[in-house]
Length: 174
Image (tube, rainbow, N blue to C red; front, side):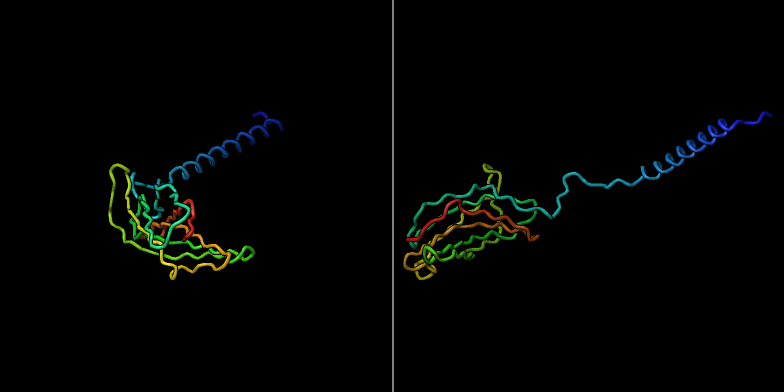
C-alpha cells in the first residue's frame, strides 16, 4: 500500500467534513419541516373586531334654537355582537377671547342594539333624534363668550371595542 501524501490526507478530511455537514443539515431540515400547521377554518369570526360606521360625518346648520330637533341617521355594522349605540353632545366653551377653551362631553341618549338591517344600504341603520336643550340646561358662556355644540355617535360592541363618529360641523345655540 502506498502512503498518502499530505495533500491527499487533507482532501480526504475535507470531503469527510463536508459529508458530515450535509448529513447534519438533512437531519435538521427533516425535524423542522415537520412542525404541525395551524388549522384555521375559513370564515371563522373572532370577537376582536371593531364596529364599522358607514355614515359620513354629518353636516349641521350653523345655528339652532332651543327646542329644535336634529335627526342623525347612523349607518353601522359589526362582525362582533353590538351592545348599544349612544349619542353624546360635546360642548365647547370659551368664556372670553383670552380664556382657555373648555370641552365637556355629555351622553344624551343610549339605545340598546336592535337589528335594523337595510338591504339598500347593506348595513344597520338607526335614526337618532337630538333636541337642543333649553338655556337652563346648557352651561352657557356669559358676556362675550361662545358655546358651540358637536354631536357624536358611538357604536359599542359587547367585547368593549367601540367606534365614534361626530358631526363635521359645530353649531351655536341661539
